[in-house]
Length: 159
Image (tube, rainbow, N blue to C red; front, top):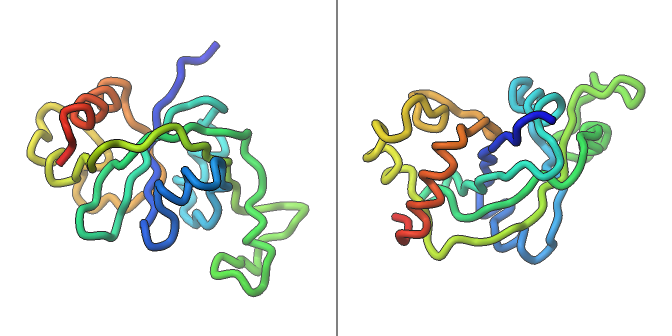
C-alpha cells in the first residue's frame, strides 16, 4: 500500500471558506484550471489523504483547518456548463479535460497559521512549495514533516 500523502488546498474565504465546508460536510473541489493542480487530484490524491485547508486572498492568508480527500477523482461538471465561470468549450464529456475530488471537513483550527508566520520559520520547513516565490498553485503536495509542523503551529495558537 502506498504511503499516505498530505496536501494543501487553497480557497478564497469569500468564495468557499472552512466554515462553508463545515456546514456542508463534503464538497466537490471544482473550478481548478491548472494542469499541475489537476494532475495532483487526478493521479496522486487518494481517499483519506489529509488536506491543509488554506484561506487565500484575504487579510490573513494561511491554514485554517484540516479536510480529507473524500472521493476518487471524477470529471469536473462545471467544465461542461456554458453559464459557469469554469466552462471549457474545448472539453468534451467523452474526453474531460478537468477533474476534481470531493473534499470532506475534518476540523477547524482555533486560529490561522498565517503565511507570514510560516515564512518567518521557513528554515524549519525546508523546500516547501507554499513558501516558494511565485508559487500560485491552488493544490500542492505537503511533506509529512511540513504537515506536522503546521499542526504544531496550529496547536500553539496559529498566527
